[in-house]
Length: 252
Length: 282
Image (tube, rainbow over all chains, first blue to last red; front, side, top):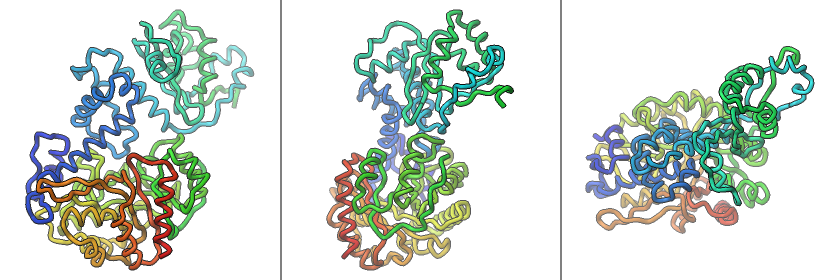
């Protein structure tokens, strides 16, 4: 008998022998025929990782990527048949993979790849209507709340994360400078795009996403970063379609 | 979720293609002989975005076949109910003309292996597969069709032939069958049996769809041919010949051309579909 637990054991562990009782057409031991499954499983998972983490692939090159992805898929096989979300543990895995641990920004770069993919598959939403921002009194506006669009993602980083992405994806992008850069991903149509966040905007948007009013979020952001500029943050959020809907009792 | 597209009841007896997003514009502009498409269910389980929008647009124009690759119908562990619920959501929304899955397993416990893994053909496997198919058909509220695998090896404990196994499954569950002709060729070559014998013992009256696709060639430890079901190449002549033989037994059927790896330009896939169209006129 070959149960599925024993068949599975060798699939991601080349040191394991092939299970017993597997035969070829002439009833001889199946030998390397079992390896077809090993190869299919490992190769398909590495290909899925390659499609999922294009920025990491660019940053470390094909050979390094193949090495780290092989180790990752063997130790972190998928836990769902929905492969579009495979790799959620990769950002946490990278700093603990000794050959690449010295590249400090890789984990955040992997978070960016992951967030781009989540944004790509997020729910659609109608375009944000900014009209209430003009009709509400300044006081009422401070009481209003917004919801972020389902495709909006926020990533805090101590690295020049946006510049790293841009340098590897846009022509004529400047070389990343030594600075910390938070990133927001938005998806106005079907294509997610990263944006560098100005000082304090990450905290402001995170507070809004958590249900704080404009006033509360403004205070929170200023508290965290005295350089936060509401006009700059709001203008970026509106021009990139970061918001889904504004909510205030005067708008009902 | 997007608006519900119109319902199409049955796949037409014409060529279809495995849908690849990079072909969207070309396929919509110039489908050639293609009247229906097949999509892998798991690629349309996000909440929105381009994949679902494309599928909605395609369903306005083509009949849709939803082809699951992750249900693990042959799994020893229970079916993943969350996954079954996702499948139901997709089928309730897109109302496909056909839903198909594989005689294989891919999930063990919580782990998904992303491959179609083989089963011993025993009474115990038969009971399990039939229970799972009944469960799927109950949840989806529709008949499903079951695809024969590509085999690279056999299990010492098997007591039934694959064709007897499939025949019994259809009797116990009233499911239909998807006959992958390339898989028949790959398995027969790999296990040194005749593909004609397979077709002769296969329950053709249960077939609702054919698949053809390309394979790669390798050899085993003894230098014997070992074909790999790669879907990375054109359909070979012996597979087209087998399709002719199968169609001679069934009459016209929906015939799908699969090409999943190293996907070529639309013109190449369109030509493969035209080849299938020719086979359907013989």
